[in-house]
Figure 1 (tube, rainbow over the protein chains, first blue to last red):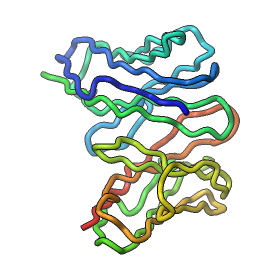
Figure 2: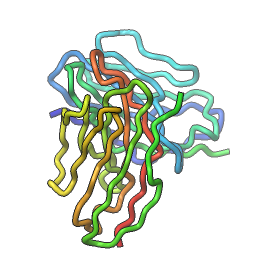
Figure 3: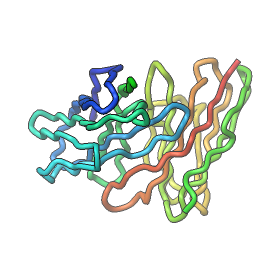
Length: 115
Length: 114
């Protein structure tokens, strides 16, 4: 079974600075998807960024980018120019490419942004 | 396009009662998944329904059940409630077929068991 680990339960960053959230996963599969989801306080969870394992190029969405290291099974999220609105729980998630497989979520990292 | 809608948003029950939560997915989405979120356990997968069939099931007791209707709306039921069932229950929908797409989450139903 696949597992997802986020070793940083809490992190903080100064506004306008850069922060990196770590995620590692364990799988025997070669083809899969990785996601970062954001859950602001008392608000719904939304997708931040998605990476397809067969793509070597790291995904980027505006201020959010990932460092995908397939051999190391590492998938970190970098947030540049942090804003107060980035404060949230961040969940790393894995999904097999095979049909019918469910998502596996990590335990989450709570990010605080300091003004 | 309307998002994923969950009702009720908040509810309080007592031990031994049962509860039914409802989820309306995004129009056109045929897959609905349910998750239990607690501070100690994080997000735990309950089950997934696709075209009215349960496709996957997590490691929860039989007190937790669900179903999906022909219009893709889903309900989950928890019988004989226990204090430990207090949690935020999240529903997520996706297209559900072919290449694994993203999940779209609802705002959740917060259940408190007294």
